[in-house]
Image (tube, rainbow, N blue to C red; front, side, top):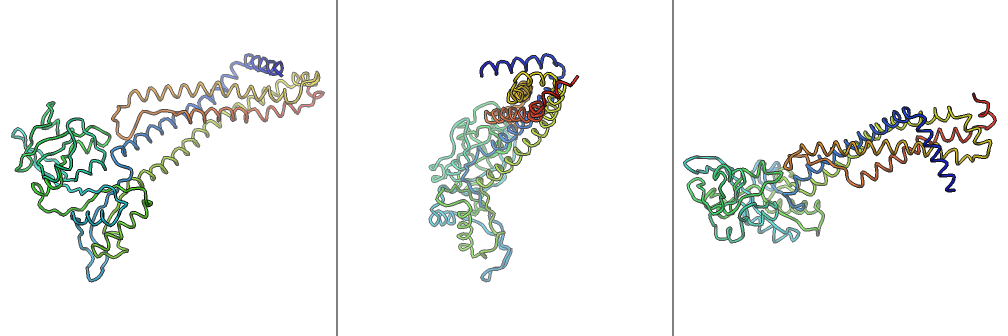
Length: 410
């Protein structure tokens, strides 16, 4: 058996060396197909990682609830009534819905910030301390807002990196003061840079109680943020929240315009489904390109079998088995596709590495492209299967040749 295998590989080597140009051109089609496949999958992987990096600043169980206006009459209440939340509504939901873990209001107002006789306009948000467990905002200096800040109504703020750079240049802002409208606030922390920092960098956060005391005396708000435990499915929980709010505000149960509920989990699932479809499409495109190379290998192997008809006849006349003849062509096909394919794969990975060199770490919506081990193993299996398929027809032709007729070939 070992002697037969060695004999086959010696014959394959002689066949390839005897047709170097033809073997090289045949391999180029396979190499190009795998190169395109690697580039498509690598770039797609980089884009997918970049998009999902957007969700790193959010708890996966986080839910946004935005109030709007009613669109249906109900119990004597006309349509078009605006809805506002209060702290009592938060307590009501927290008490009646045990699946709610964390809950925070989110209210916003544009404010004048005065520093060194210069006046700037920044969006200022009033939130509860639990907000920073929902949003997962990290700080590069100082700290986030804590429960004591909110309970005592402390005049403290957490600022974005852009606010810090504009107001304090390269100095540390922690412990320093800023003027917001007509009041003075102490900076306790600076938000660390992240993928969403293009927006977060220009925000100022302060405790909700402080916000309603010094910025906006109206304690009503239109947005609340919460996180949910896994006791009930997200869809059922959202339905329960909507029903509870409809009952509390005397809103028609079928009025879906009064509240807008936005779940991070559902967004992540939607993107997962989207990228699953994209990955399938990229594999289809890559394998379609590879298919042309496989057809090229099959044609060349068939031509090789036709050219070696007399040689095959001699081998069969002296006792060569059909399985041995088949193995010669199938192994040669696998060898050509494997060498060419791995060359294309390595070249593709090199190109991806070069592309990654030009992508900034904080690039928006795009991470450095790469190929994971699962994709590499899958591509290897594709190569082996491709080589086998390409050699099947030529191998069958060679194995089924009649020795007498083959010997008559000139």
